Amino acid sequence: MNNGDSWREARGGLAQFRSRTLMVDPADSNRVYSGSINRFNSNDGSLARSADGGATWTNFPLQAPVLSLALHPTDGQTVWFSTTTGQYGTFASLYRSRDQGANFQEILGTYNIPGVALDPANPRNVYAIAEYGGVYQLARSTDEGANFSQGQQTTIQMVTVVVDPVTPANIYLGTNGGVYRSTDSGANHRLKRRFARQRGRAGRLDCDRQARRMLYAATSSGVYKRAGGESSWTAANGGLENLTVRQLVIDPHTPNALYAATLNGGVWRTTDGGATWNPTGTNAAIISRESVVGAFDFVGGGVAPGELVSIFGPASGRARAHRQPRLTHRRASCPPELAGVQVFVNDVASRCST
Image (cartoon, rainbow, N blue to C red):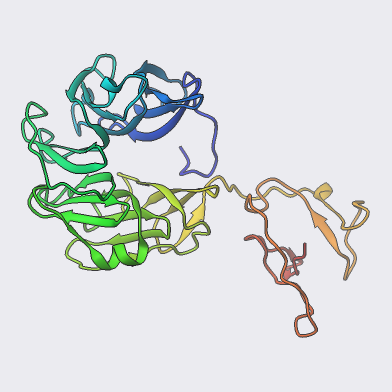
């Protein structure tokens, strides 16, 4: 509700299930779907739906981990979700629900399905990554899943698939060998070699329809982007402290605004297409008179010139450890800023220490 400035727990009804993928329904921003894995049994999973922005959830147990979701762009009812082998091998499949997940139909059995995507311009076109015996291919249906054509096979692990919203014949695949692109609706795909060789795994992809068809890739080396018509990728990591990015989500209502979920580094947000990232959940610091105390005795009552003090308060620094640079004869003072925090006394910048 406030662009990530503050967070509250939203898992009522999710119970023991750990969310692996989330998607907001384009037809209703309060309706959210979660594909989950049972945190006590990795062969079990669930599809869950919230009608109130995540405050409460309704679970639809599947007995298999849910890996990806795709939602119809307009009808508010159709949900596609994919699974891998669960407690029973028959549950590894692609499924479709016509009633927001309450009931579902198996569409493409036998295969593990790491990723699924719909053509936003024509949702009858469905793309699914299918894996069997370590061999991957991109399967395509033009009749809403009634029939699928097989694509080029590879042993490179495919992770996610994205359809270009402006030119639907362009299909992007995130793999453990980089980003592949098809210009013929998935019949063939070729590796963007420079990006793949230098940056490795591209675990998640997303495409911004409003901002020049900008394609973003989440990798183990940070966030990279490529605009429609451009041939190379550029880093979009300004200020991003943790470059192991597990998930990317584009704000559909705000061009150039993205959220990045990082490994053990929290959720970050950018409003300028990755030029500048800031951590979410960092409201303005609230410092009271009683929060300023002596650094050694922790006694308040005022600050004297040259005194070392400790300042306490919520939101007064990023939630990670920072080490003070070692002092030498060439550097006998502390930096003016530490962990994104700077303190002023009578409009004069103080020095930070640890």
